[in-house]
Length: 331
Image (cartoon, rainbow, N blue to C red; front, top):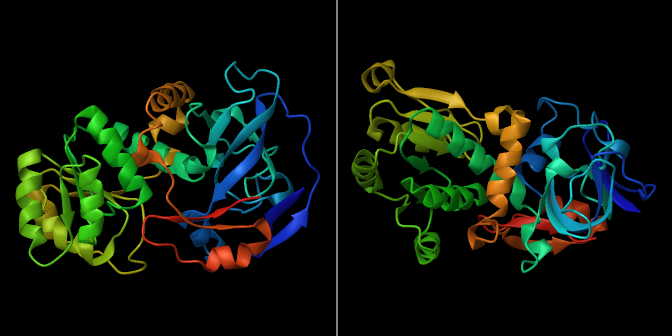
């Protein structure tokens, strides 16, 4: 079968590799309908100094973190409910060597990395979803455990921002989403998201007042740089900024020691891999059960910017999708 593989220097090449026919115990074989390119894929492949070994846990070095497809074979020990089903996949939840990544025609993947989808949704609509869904779920679990009563999302129109909005609404937890354009604001408000602010002149005063009123003391930050520098003085007491993304690149965040002391402010890294939701198998199983009950919420669907064939990987990696959308491989 055709597969996009990563080399030792983190470049990509299209290879012919054996098509898997017998899944190991605990694994599924999934015929891929579509697989998305995430921001993390581009960062890792384009940043040689990024931590990690690209080929350490992938048979044949097949790349790809997110996909959706149809289960065509089930290994021993897999619980009922997977055979013949459409599934959304987040490969990185299980890092075993027999994994065959997702930028290919047929993946070999642990069942705990796959979420069965309802029969009434299309698998392609979830080709990049599960990574964002798990991240949002795990973050809200951590924020709630830490005692935060509301959340501010700095990249509110990103896929994880949409997922956070959906989960916060289900929890009846206040969420403030920051977006770049009035069009993005209108689209989210049309989907029933109440607190959406456009980043423009004068928005900081409104953000500070709204955050204080709603008790939004957890910031899920996918931007960094000047945005965090500017909003930090407006945050309520005992707020925590959780850094997850880096849309602002290497731009520094500047927060004075006076602000740290006066606001009891905390800055910390968030990683879904290190979260209790992902590290604890029982909690991950419970999360999947909860997510399965609401995955058909339109806010969880992958927004596709453009579809590419597997042999168009160079063009796909260069493609700059509209904000919030992803390039998607269709075998």
